[in-house]
Amino acid sequence: MGTIAVVGASLSGLHAAEALRAGAAGAPGYEGEVVVLDASPTLPPDRPPLSKQVLAGEWELAQAKVPLADRLGELDLDLRLGTTATWLGPDGGDGRTLGLDDGTELQVEGVVLATGAAVRHLPGPPLGGVHAIRTGEDAVALCADLDAGPSRVVVVGAGFIGAEAAATCRGRGLEVTMLEAASTPMVRVLPPEVGAFVADLHRDQGVDVRLGTGVERLEAGADGRVRAVHLADGSVVEADVVVVGIGVVPQTGWLEGSGLQLGDGVVCDGTMLAGPRVVACGDVARWPNPHFGEEMRVEHWENAVEQGGHAGRRLLDELAGRPGTPFGPVPWFWSDQYDRKIQLAGRPAATDEFVLVDGTVEERRFAALFRRGDRCTAVLGVNRPRHVMQARMQLAESLAWDAVAARFAPTD
Amino acid sequence: MKVVVNFDLCESNAVCMGIAPEVFEVRDDDFLYVLQEEPGEELRDKVVEAARRCPKQAIVVED
Image (cartoon, rainbow over all chains, first blue to last red; front, side, top):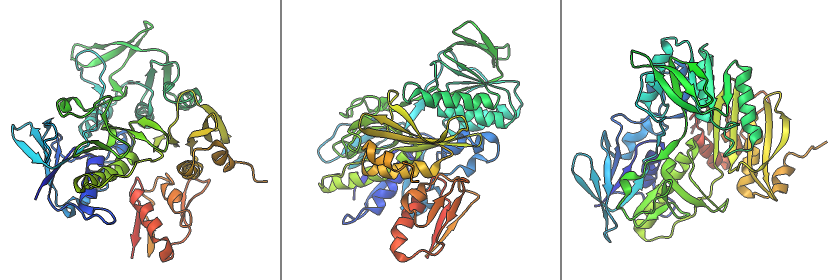
């Protein structure tokens, strides 16, 4: 009886493990050993609540559980927390060797790569009071600093994680400055109307939003904690706490020598197969999404779940010599900021046309479609979940602009 | 089959509505309404899928 290793026990890895056991129509579940490894000494938390309920102090970290956390016992996994995979050998014809940080090796017939991504840091030495929000420990440490009642929190980066952190800090009654190096938040990936809306939403709530100003350096006080942020334009913002949300980097360094193709993620085919006997899923996986005809790497919650399941089934196919099926979802995510729920489904680009189809940006409640030629690439909703989901269902059928737009045509 | 929603967990993401609009509806007040608490068996697959994909795991399907 063989062994499959799942590297990464976060959302995506666990869903892959579940799929390995569950099998699929016409394909039995895996009966060999399933070893699930994670560098974290405890089961990684569900991430969406980290920047919301946990940071707000409303939830204990233990409440932020991934859906499978209570069902792991049923899956008969060899869960090895606090264990880091350090290298993966090339395909040996009948299996691969996985090296672990305790010096041991695992002989495996299949591997699921779900190592996720790690946060980018600001240059310079680590300082007290400077936080990311990625792991449970990150959230707890930041929460403790917020509990101490800082006079000002500076959020670096106005992407969704930074914006959620800013909203949660305002919800705690703290003074917040949000910095963004670009002229408009998220302008590299979304039409500028979206970032302009996000900036205004936060200004409405009393956040000092500063755009087009990068961070020059952080200044430490005598106690070794941050005391001010120096900006590229020469201005200085005093801060007791700094939250850094400037993106993540897929964790692929340990895979040099595996024979796998790496490049901003583990490069997979359209079925999530990365190489012989290896699949990848979640934040670390890059694949050509056949529905969009575009290569992508998606860091969203739902993608971690669905892609994990798909990758697990794909590995069963691989081991049985069956061809895989393509993975072609319409990516979707949500972000809760203040009393606004922002949802986006699809695959937008910064240069897409922003077409409002319901409500107005001014009332902070609207739905918009993104148009690229005769295609609808995505739908964005602010407190418009119904519109987003209806458009998403249509996008899953066809990206044709006319078909999606017709759903929002006036009916009277 | 009985559909039970834990409204303390529900965040009205409307994923369920996308999958099973016959059973779940998020209205303009941003709240989720369960249109059929005991839907017919023909909807079971959709309802189970909706429960599985709920990001807050707020839907329980009781037999």
